[in-house]
Length: 200
Image 1 (cartoon, rainbow, N blue to C red):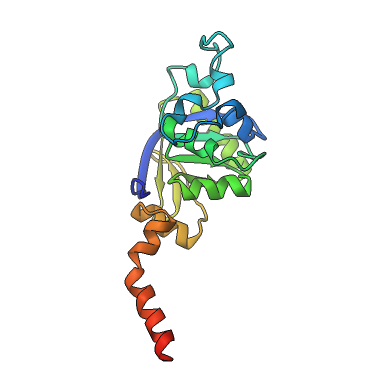
Image 2: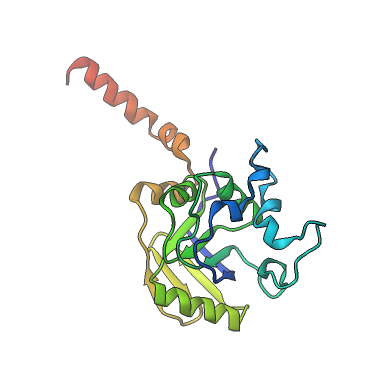
């Protein structure tokens, strides 16, 4: 299923200055029986956002009206634990387009890229300064330029580069998942197979 194209994103951020956040915290196991990707945003960090009675937990950054945006900024080793793709569905369903950290668990990072979410890796000292900046001024806006692979704090903050797999970058820029990409090059695939058949 194709996704929204990702090129340049300018947004405020939600800061989550905690390390080693695992997928069970991102999406509690009791919600994994749901089979549709739709509506998963409601369950993102459910046990952090609401108590057992369904009341909002005071002090949770997601319940703080000062913070909003399409960029989640978190401490290092984000997305560790089980490989559940539901965690990324919840992040996307909540409205995030990108997650920033100094380190992502490999499977989680790949799940992000496969579901239209950009994982941006920055150095630890830059991450800590960014978290402090957002906490002190929730209106701070960042700019993520996927084409140039640059992350910038606006209006005049330092720009830092980030790495991304070339193939996944192309998919994000064009709003394609793996199946969409294969369909987009099907003529080239057919031509290659024909050349193989003809021995050329």
